[in-house]
Amino acid sequence: MPVIKSAKKRMRQEKKRTAINRTKKENLKILIKNVRTDKTVKNLTAVFSALDKAAKVDLIHKNKASRLKSRLSKKEGTTKASQKPAQKKKVVKKTNKR
Image 1 (tube, rainbow, N blue to C red):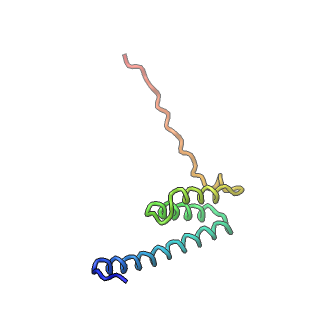
Image 2 (cartoon, rainbow, N blue to C red):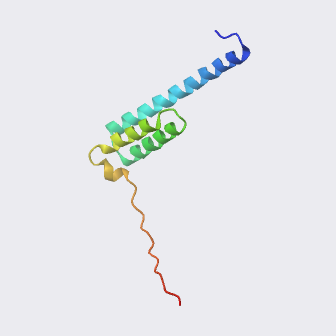
Image 3 (tube, rainbow, N blue to C red):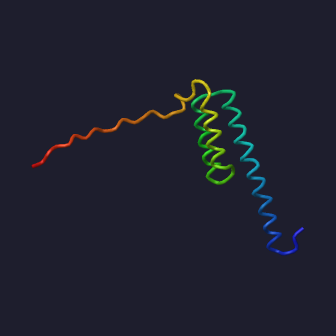
């Protein structure tokens, strides 16, 4: 047990953060499990955004988030559904001004 006042405070903070991180990880696992059972575009986008957010705040490593996203989208028929439609580029005609 810590004796110093700042060490006691640090321990209280770690306890709170650990509880918060644990619930976030559990929710992330539930989302991933939902995608594996019912693969829809809505579920995939929800998991992808959750994984990106988790990687952003260092809840999980960014490579792990990337690996999970790749594995989830790799299954049959989801690669086309999970990709956003490509936007058309505007064609600008160049005119010669002399």
